[in-house]
Image (cartoon, rainbow, N blue to C red; front, side):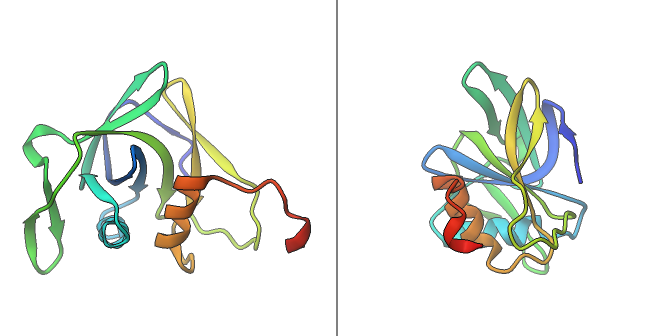
Length: 149
């Protein structure tokens, strides 16, 4: 599990939903772009694929694309495609494609990015990951677990 992300350039793919973004991080071939494509199919908009730039402001961490790859997404076995994109989005959720969790209801995790903490979820072998990530990104965690235990 990653414990911290530094500001600046980070290897990952990022998709925006209404000004709040999901950043997928992991090794090459881990499924970052595949998850990004699935999130775009759910109505998200590309921020950046393969590399992102993280900057800090008082209101949070913001994600943008390096100028050389803005508006492009690399799809294995197809090529580099043009894709509608947003210039910048507030980072709201990080998906660690190498992290696997076995608990049915894991304790929510955060990761330090600059001086802020951002929600972190596992991305390895998670059923319904794209829609679950989208819902968590847009609406957050429920604090009412009584009915699920």
